Image 1 (cartoon, rainbow, N blue to C red):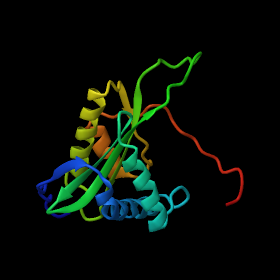
Image 2: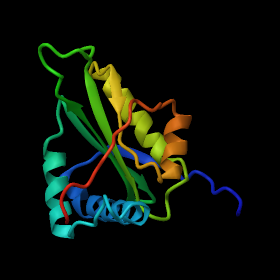
Image 3: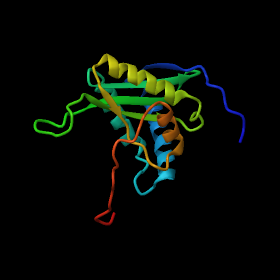
Image 4: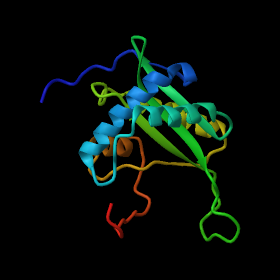
Length: 169
């Protein structure tokens, strides 16, 4: 194994539609990474569909949604978003908490440099500022690098999601 790479100088700022092409590049890179991990669950969308997804997400920025980018040497190399999850509603046995979900993507070649940690810290700060009590994220069991990062940052397993295919694809 080679020597650890140094953390590059990273700038983080709110995403806007001017970042759309680079957001799509990061998203498609993350999708390819996930397909390699579990092709039964993940797929690589078209660039056009990814652009629609990210444009909607960026345009949704506000009190319940934030999207940010990480920039190295003028290039967007990572993106992250946080979005409020609707409460479980009246009569739920689950404690009523303000919960938001984090999503994160890092461009191939920039993973493992600490950029994800910086993005998560930024979104956790946003969550605190917006009265969020708990943040959650979804990660595949086989995504060992992401699991190491999240555990190192204090994330813990919260239940188990089981899946069963009931119809052919």
